[in-house]
Length: 305
Image 1: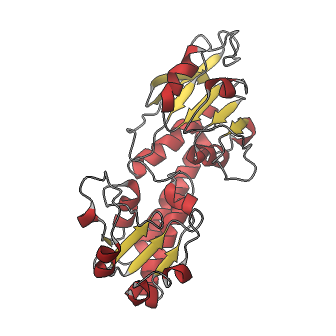
Image 2: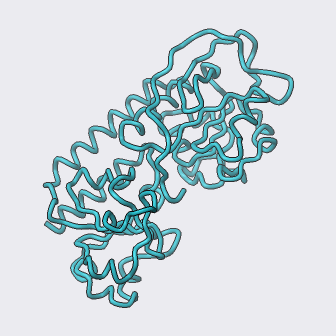
């Protein structure tokens, strides 16, 4: 999913309640009438789902990772084509960008999880009484933790979800504490080889901000919503201390490739080991592997200081 978009709001923890189940004869959830349900507050409102859904469909790579990390993997029957982690995830041709209600309903889900309401898919599924949790891209760390908590509550794995978020918090705090503030260091985060980047106001930019790094893309971010496209001349003039490549998979970029770009071999980061090759997926998702992204930044900061 590229790039990470700043959508969504803080998700409050829901409460357990009893309500009429969401089943139906029209290909809906399949939950039994009067079954115990859990109400979760998501971006699409208060959503009632079976207390222990058995047929979950995920249309978000981030949420797929979360479901498996909190132990709900066995309950997942289908995920979208971009959900490539973990390997055990049941990938299909389903799309979160061009969702097809009929194709989703064919899996007889009792819960659908997604991060974007593309083409009115939420209402389309709600019409046939399929519970849908809309958990948009997190705008900050707290929202990322809240969404993991939401999925834990919705799937009957609340304790496991808390364990995951507690571990993430501890790992991130440890990494940041071990890396001295790098206020004098500048960086460039590359989304693709067309020089699209992120500004400090994005989720990704905020992660870098924890280390005190200065983002060279901020001055170029005017009307691009946090994702400016830099010119080669501008980037060469800025000469960042660190270059983070989040396009190693999509665009085949690496440290060696940068030396072939006109003028790039003269950059300080390229000449002195300041190029960091990131995993595209880890750098663009706000789920359980976020601590790995933070660790990659922390290691780079310590290396150059």
